[in-house]
Image (cartoon, rainbow, N blue to C red; front, side, top):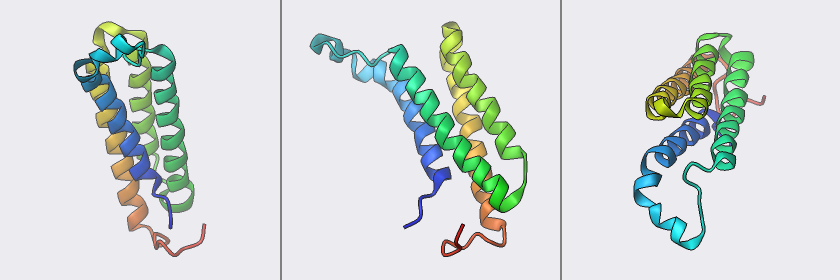
Amino acid sequence: MKLNWDILGATTSIACAIHCALLPIVMTSFTLFGVNIIHNQWFEWGMIFLAFFVGAYSLFHGFIKHHQSYTPVLVFCAGALFLVLKQLVPIYEYLFLAMAVALILYAHSRNYLLCKKSKCSSPHHKH
């Protein structure tokens, strides 16, 4: 079974958005039990690094092996920058998060489509 890194990257980005947008509303009771993953800096930066690692691997693999288009890589880098800005400028956290998720999802979907259009996009092709 072949792992689709674009789908994993998009899923990671969506999980980050859900965490940032819904977790404070749904999970505020966690603090009653001594668990704090809301605005936990270690968790937040960990999610950002995970999203960056998965995205970078996926996009550079697509670039090198399939399509040689800089567009997905540049769009992804802009999205990653907004994730970092979300952490550094908390007053605009939700605006930066929305921009980051939109850009990262677009980068992964564009990368996926470009890889699919390439001649070596067969799931049975050896890389």
